[in-house]
Image (cartoon, rainbow, N blue to C red; front, side):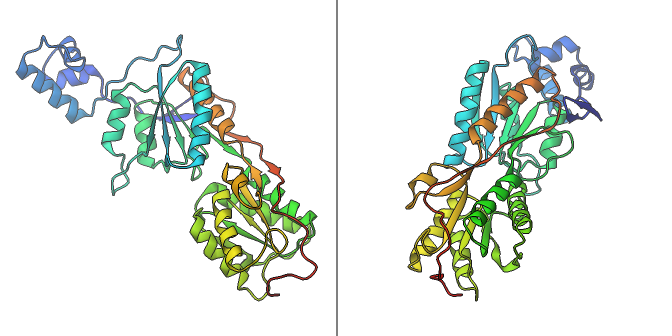
Length: 354
């Protein structure tokens, strides 16, 4: 196993010479079959095709480092969210500047055993993609191995889990974002501050909660385990978690919600209890998606630069394609607080129980 461009690369797959020897033909004949030439006898074509499949040979177009690559794949977790829209916008702008074409797909698909779904991977090589961007995709070890084996460079945008050593990724300063959100509420005078986090297994979720806890500790505020709830980045689950917080003997006067989408669920729960934002409870979100401005009141939130993250990832991918190794494998872009109308000083007498 060797390292290339910060990414682990397995030994190359079977060469055309190995395929030719397996099929009992010359290398030029095997090459004709691979390239779809019609001047090959049917029986010879059959033997070569069977050898190609049996040995797992994958034809890769040659990458000319003196020219801009023509095509890359952007793999997103879903295509029906403003999150994906912001990422796509960033990739499109950077791709236009670099003279690239983009293929967008949702996936990658996996088998029940966690292996790469061959259809998606075969399409990737068949269309001659020179690299892959993964956004919030749960890439399996088998998929990492497949990409490394075929020497297809890739970069992760906001990886769900800690990537293997050497894998290049781009994300936001999630820990600092959690610190900033909690510090804003503390500065307003809040002491009973809850957090509704996303998925326990996600890197970004853990970092945001860790930042929140660090800010509380620095301010000398007591950490309350019952004030930390997880909602898996789901709006309806966040609504339920907010109801649970309101039912505590001493409910919070402020809540840091680790995504704008979940904050909408929190708004719904508070409305169902007849509570006002921010007169009764202050709310801070995370992301600064368009939804943050649509709520009533407009949501104070931590902005993470999604489009900039995507554009940075594309530029790093182009560097990998050209054999240029980045100085580090992890790039973090700064987050910042966007103050709107959903936060204020706590009421002199809390409207919720406690």
